[in-house]
Length: 612
Image (tube, rainbow, N blue to C red; front, top):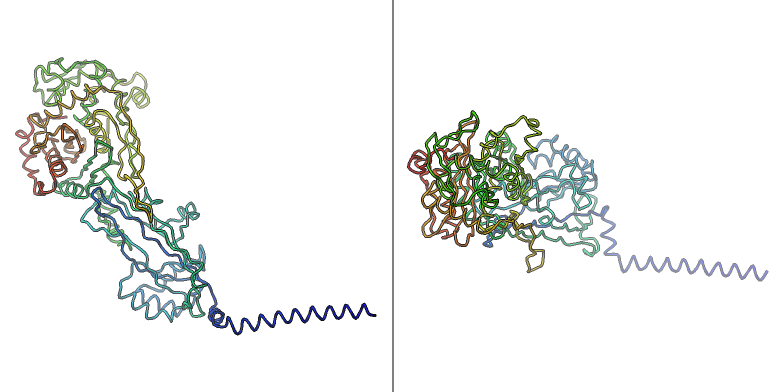
């Protein structure tokens, strides 16, 4: 009996103790934490808000900011909290869109997460933002967020270089969701914005808010203890010279033709300027895309979205004679002094190939063949060298493959070879006559302006091929030290003597040959003209050059489509750009350039008219 009483007493003590603890906790909550818990009781949800980081800027070689950020105001809706039709009508009216448009935008949020905010209005005007702010108390589940859009402080085109941002696609989201992307995010779509997305995007922050039953913020959750700040994107430091870029764009536009300019620092492969004409206005795609203007771009028959510097292939014309000369010298197929007699006609079997309309040059050595661009000299030389060696040296200089430039979408054309012709025409079904066209940069040979610029830079520095690139490094957040990026370089197995011979001849091209309109005061410029036959219209005009001759700091390629002779049209553009870069901006004025007059008076400006 005593045992039973003892057990009952023990149970009573336990029950009393439990109730005492519960009662004490109740008193503590009611008296000491009433204020905090009262606010929580008024709230019925906890909202996580993503805080977008500022995207990294782009800064040119002279520390000029060419891509920055500016605020973009967005209206977002939490689909699960915004279901009232009357409220939807009200918001649609405030955003000046239809009820159906608003419903469609909200519905997209249900596909991913009905509790995550989805954007229903982006880049809204300040007046609209103020009107919405005044009515937010009537719109549960609606919020206004400040995001970022790009700002272009300078009057640059550079659209093919910089690229733009676009909403992340469904396929991209499936691949990139683990990196923190959500359906309303934007990502780099073209150019450097796309190539360096991981550097530029930064890392989102998070903010937790208590939200009451009418969608109004009831303050921070746990006083922001669980909030995480954003990490801004890395600034990119470019090799680009903004002033040179602007000048290249202006000079190309003055021709009234399509074309491209590529300028490279031959000391490291950094791109100083890259212009492709026509281009497009990046502001059309910044923030909210103007659909009408976008359609105009897409439907434009001149294809402004097409980067002619890296994606268009053209016959290089006489510029490619330089490669044949280098290969022949290095393989000792010819000496600089040896002459070939040019009668104006080269015969191979029954074929007759003219040099400048049948007008001969007489005895021609290597230097004169480059200065006056004698076709007959190279018709002979490719047979002295051999087709296999011609292909081998082309590959050595990077032709027939992409350069690896840090821009997406680069293209290249195949480099003709024995295997290439065997596959295309069949073994034994092509003749030596195909080589005659290749000797002067025609036939199946095609190159991009970028490839020719890298080739010219390699001649300028006497034999080191550098991978072309725009970004020299990036600046991590909260760091004072730029992290440099590594790019490939390749020292070619070609003697300095060979390069010196060709370089000297290129100097003669500008001083007394077909490229005299590229001459620059107080600067020795070396170059080569090229006029590429075009079966669809007038010939394309090429000019490549480097300067100063003694210690080159710029190598440049200019292509103007359907413009005629390289020495008349492209050479003056190259001269203006070299003058700006070497002598300084104050020495260069962007004027009419007298391009039309130069083209019409080609008999004066370019003695060897058919510079093919």
